Image (cartoon, rainbow, N blue to C red):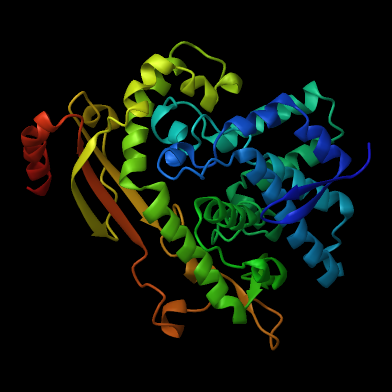
Length: 384
């Protein structure tokens, strides 16, 4: 099997190795074509109908660009062509464990004891290795799995920061989805190419980490700023959430039939035409109250108790990075005067860098306007 090139509207020509092509040409990977990248968002923003298939290939391409850059700049890292391929494979399959309507499944539908999509993806990948006789050693499989979901003892090592950076959340996954989502929604998308190329591996506190040239501080801030805008204006748009609240019970009903996860996709749900009447006719829950709290502790809620036949009460937390209170303080930089990495207090260098980096949006919806008065009393109860 030879190398293959495909064309992508975001990154242009992308080269695939024979092993990557073998992985792509499987049911498990092709399933990603039927998982929309932004879930229910396309019901409000019609062009946001791209899928996790194209995103995954894009992430793999960006991982290759960053690895190639490090290979050329730092021969002391002893990066091989095979290691570059392993990183690209990890990037390629990082989303293979997603359920229908992407994060909606993990946030509201999966069982409490069920793994998150990263863990599900690792199981699926390991089964693929056996099923399709993929030429990967046990050590290589371990490296790929650790790149996808780095264990705590590896998170400070540069190799495990490229695809899923647990330290400061600057990784190729984020760069691709911000570029791709912006493109398909119709928003102006920025150029983050310097984040891929102005990077080095340097020591910080005795760990070899990814560090960026200090002159691209604004590029990095812009990456987080774009993420915030997408979450605020697009992913968590009040009407997108209203559609989600209609989809959740349908998804749960299908899941309870015992459907095999690997066959559970967006089409499984959208083929339930009788169940989708409210969605087709846009008979949506109506938002009657909204409150925004800056830098709060997310309230503990039980979703089952607040999504009933009358009302929906939900909390959406938006920040510069998920599960990270201040990612900018954990970004490592370098300049031409030093051989070690350092951090920068970004808010002191620019007035546009926020000092508060998290907000929680509390929303109350009614399923029918007749329930408005009853819902008002629920809202007042929150304020006491």
